[in-house]
Amino acid sequence: MNQLAMNTIRTPRHDIRNASSAPFKAKSAGRTVIVSNRVPSPNEKGATAGGLAVALADAATPGSLWFGWSGKRSQETSTSAELVEADGVTYATIDIGERDHIRYYNGFANGALWPLFHFRAGLLMFSRPDYDAYRKVNKAFAAALKPLLNPDDLIWIHDYQLMTMAAELRSLGVKNPIGFFMHIPFVPNELLDVLPPAAELLAGLAACEVVGFQRESDVKSFLGSAEKFLGVDVAADGSFAWQERRVRAVLTPIGIDAQKFAKIAERAELTGDAKRMDESLGDRALVLGVDRLDYSKGLPQRFDAFGRLLYCFPQHLRQVNFLQIAARSRQEVGSYQTLRRELDRRAGDINGEFSDFDWVPLRYMTHAVKRTAIAGFYRRARVGLVTPLRDGMNLVAKEYVAAQDSEDPGVLVLSRFAGAADELTEALIVNPFDADEVAEAIHLALTMSLEERKQRHAALAAKVNYTTAQRFCETFLGHLAKVRPN
Ligand code: ADQ
Image (tube, rainbow, N blue to C red; front, side, top):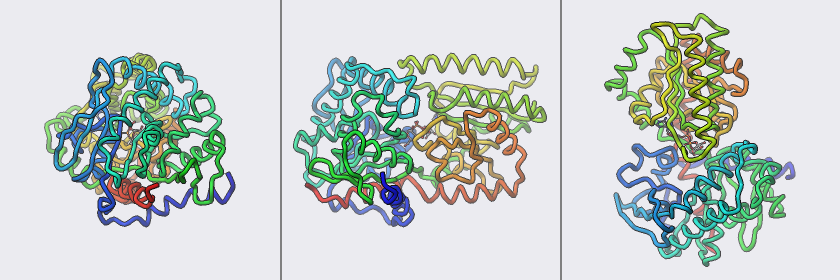
């Protein structure tokens, strides 16, 4: 890619900074149709749903349509959707066949794409039947969505499970503007090359007019891969011609509703969970990690770093508790079972080595915890440990900042391999592969003056309050609304 193209990749960030904070007006141009693998059930919208669903709640305005998998596995993948309406939003879902789901979701999406796109080529498990099922499910999604579409709808597809869906919609004759947002990182073309259907997946994305990413490096990797696998020329504005349309890569980092989350955290202080936490800690400082139990989150390395902290800085013995909440996920995928056993072992090693009869340094739980309780724990934590080996964004980092008491804030220790590190530069930025560096950062955080903590937090809070979920939706849909139908 030429220098000019690399420079202009930064333009979208500039767009975000200047984006209007007024509510998005694309509705006059048609409905927003959101497509994601999982669709939140209407009554959990914005409340208990995961990161993606919470961030998209702002795009699901009255009149819009949210399409995806019902969460039910049936005998066969269905080809027509069931519709439910709530608060003016239509939720349209299909069931996926049991066998298709295993191959599409556990097999290709989470056994091949997820590890590779998190730079773990060694964990990639590719099989043609898995990829065929992925194509089949993407095709079924397209076929079931097509009859629900109006000519002026804007279609917004989400994430790595649905990379070929736009191409299926095009082959069914859909002409609407289509956007795609990749929640996970994108890899440089040398790594993508490992994946046999790399070119087909890129062609799937190139069936969209707008393809959005979390980080500048993701935009750059996508465009570099398009040059290599599709043979396109990338123009100075980060766009390229593919078949009968122009595809534009944009930088639209995701965020949270920070003000709302801050209120939840403040209120959480008064709950029974917060009181129990206080009583169990006494005067000890809390170091907190909150993640899905996933190898991309760097949990074994984080446990080792905590062990190094206790070994290298013994002044923290009995003065600190590390709580790791790691909700089990994707338990049907072998590498996740291995990770769980590995963490059990390391937690046992650390507690065996450093515990006293009345103090256990590491608390580790593998079930999901209510959002309010997590918000309260963030607020209580002196250190937020967010140290993934690779992460698209990592919303936990933003939630931790939003939850702090600005008069006595905790310190965020953040991996430089999380997308959030591009923005949250006032955190203590670490390389999660270096246990001693992370241990030093935790020590620094635990001993940091109130004045420095307040300064760092004020800068981080301003950013988290700026790059919100609402701004993310407005910015992406703003790009899509500019596309003229073909
Ligand atoms: P995830 O990998 O799921 O998302 P993340 O961004 O951290 O990761 O969001 C997780 C959400 O689930 C947060 O809202 C968090 O509070 C919640 N959560 C995490 N652990 C939990 C637990 N143990 N119990 C209960 N709730 C828990 C993907 C990408 C990310 C990207 C998001 C959004 O991998 O990089 O930031 O999509 O684009």
